[in-house]
Length: 425
Image 1 (cartoon, rainbow, N blue to C red):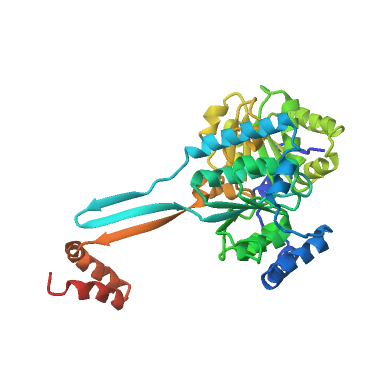
Image 2 (cartoon, rainbow, N blue to C red; image 1 turned 180 degrees about the vertical axis):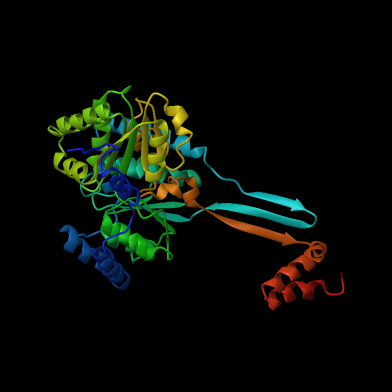
C-alpha cells in the first residue's frame, strides 16, 4: 500500500525528484470553468449566484446571507463539550497571533523624516469549505489572525454552514456569513454583488475551482495563496512506535484523494513496519476510500541512511507540514529551512497544529515553503512608506539624485530636483 523505496532501487531518485517538483498547477479545464463562472457573477450579481448554486450544489437560495437569528440557532445546536473545545482553540490561536502585531515607526535625521505606517485591511473574506468535510478549524485559523491585525469587517462564505462552523465563526470574530461556495463565492467576494460586499483580500482553502478562481481574481483583490493538495513529510526513526507514524500519515491522507503523505525513515526495517501499520489501520478507517487512494497514488516511504540525508530530502521537498519524530528532533529542526510548520518530537502529531497549538494552520503547499510563510497577522495589514524632506535636506542630496537620474536617462526626474534647488547649491 505505502511503497518503500530503498537507496538501491532504480525508482528511488526518480520518485523523490518527482515529489520535489510538485507544484500548484491546475488542469486547464479548471481555469476555463472558473473563468466562465467569474464572468457570470460579474455580469449577473446575486441572480447569477443563485443560478450557479442551483446548478452546482443543487441548492435553492432565497437569502444569500445568513441572518443573525439563523446563525445563533445553528450555533446553539453545538454540544457543550465541542463548544468548550472551540473556545479553547480560539483562545490559543488568539494568544499566539496577538504577539505577532506590527508597529508603525518613524526615523528623523538631518531634515529628513521617513517612516512606515502599518494599517489593517478594511474588509477581508474567508472561504470555508463545506463539501467532503466540515471545517470549523478553518474559520478559527483564518478569522482570528485577521481580528488580531485589526481588520474592520470579516466576511465568511461557505457552501455548508454547520452548527460547528457557525459557533466557530461567532467565537472567532466573523461579522457576516454568506451561504455560497465554489468559484462563484470567490468572484462575489472579489467584485461584490448587490448583497455580497467587495473585500480587500480573500483567504482560506478550497477545491480546484476555488483555487483557479483565486488565481483569476488576484490583482483585483489580494489572496493568501494558490493552495495545492495538503501534504505531510515525516522524518522518523525507531525511537517512535511505527503505529504512531502510520496514524500521522493517514491523518493527512484522509483529507483528500490527492493528499501527499511521505515518510523519510531511518532504516528499511522501520519503513516496512510503518507501511504494514498503514495497511492495518486503513481497514477500519471511516474515510478509507479517500485515504487509501492518497496513499497509493501520492504516498511514499524513502529510506534515508543519515541525518544529513533526512535533512536534505526534507528541505528539497519543502513540505506544508514537516514532522520530526526522531531522537534528536530539536537539533535537526535548526537545519530544516523549508517547511510551512515544524512538528518536533514523538508527542507532536500534525493534528495538534490543525486545531489547537496556536499558529494558523493555513500553510504554503506544493513546495512553496521555499519562499512562502504561514498565514498570519502580516497577511491582513498593508504598509505605507512616508517621506518628508526639508529644503536643506533636498539641497544636500540633490547632486547624488541628479547623478543617478542621469545614469537612468530620466531627465524629468532630475529636473524635479534641480528646479527646487537651483541657485541654492
